[in-house]
View 1 (tube, rainbow, N blue to C red):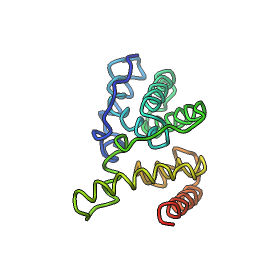
View 2: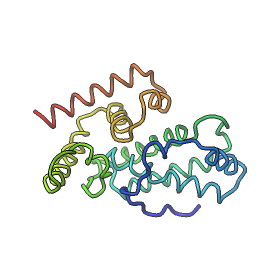
View 3: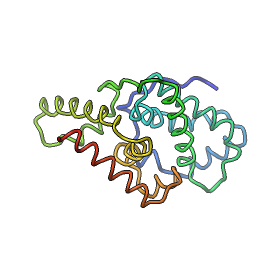
View 4: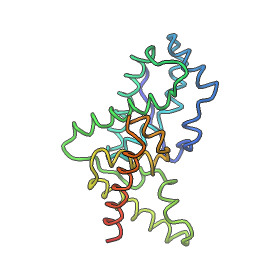
Length: 203
């Protein structure tokens, strides 16, 4: 399998596009299950940037996030024939990607250092809308740095729920499906994560 090419986070597809299971995506999955290497490569190009973004937001360095992404797609390539047609491919992929990210986090003694340039600008931009351009740029960088630092306060489950819910903009139901948790549990983790971050950002 070809190595994953570097991706620019600013080029990430929006959450709706990344989640959409169009007939074309379904056809690609079916072809990939049949051993079509070109179809599998197309699936990688469709989803790899978002998987890398999850790794970075979870605390990996950019290089480690790319390694985790490649490991995830190796597993997808190995097990795609077991994927049941009719189910959501992206949820199946994300579950594999999340485990791959945590495998890399466990290998590292210290969490990866996340630079502001590696944070998806659409995330920080939403936090500071309405401020003058120069002030907004500075505030975005500061807030993003504080936010990523604050993620260290969260438990494993709180962190992943926060990233998927507030940074990846997945719904509570989708997160519950991916993590195999009840929606009540997802909401509880999300609430605890937000409260901890709120205390850290606005003491």
